[in-house]
Figure 1 (cartoon, helix red, strand yellow):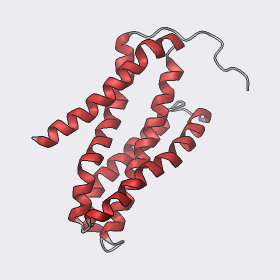
Figure 2 (spheres, one colour; figure 1 turned 45 degrees about the vertical axis):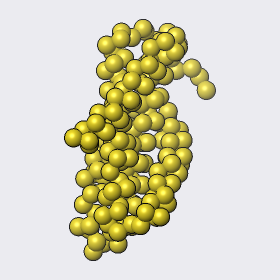
Figure 3 (cartoon, helix red, strand yellow; figure 1 turned 90 degrees about the horizontal axis):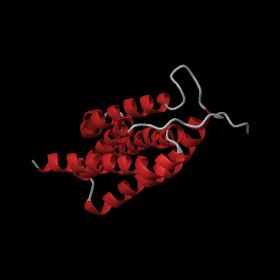
Figure 4 (cartoon, one colour; figure 1 turned 30 degrees about the horizontal axis):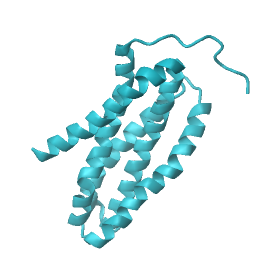
Length: 174
């Protein structure tokens, strides 16, 4: 495959790296909302405590399937929105829809049993988060020179990940 980028990547300022990391913050908000509330929501729909691990195994399995596929296609996508933005957009829209529908799955019982609807929304939610997360990781490698990825890029990403989870969990305690 010919090398697409012959010029060295320009050094990014810390502020540019922080702005690039905000996507991770938002994705972690979604993951934290899912982790903090899904069991309670599924229990309110009638899931037994013994059934909850079966619901939770779905998320990593979906991630194992979705992430390589999205990574493959996001590396090969070029359109007027750019290389990674279509995945951010689709992931954000689907995540938002799933976050709204999951707690309200009982309203859709005419379509499917409520537990099936809840489990389906958990799968869609997790897949949507992964649709956004994988291109964000690739965006860091696309934009930062190698020495900045190792020195600064990963630090800000980890900070955004951690702060996103922390904020949601602290707010849910209030």
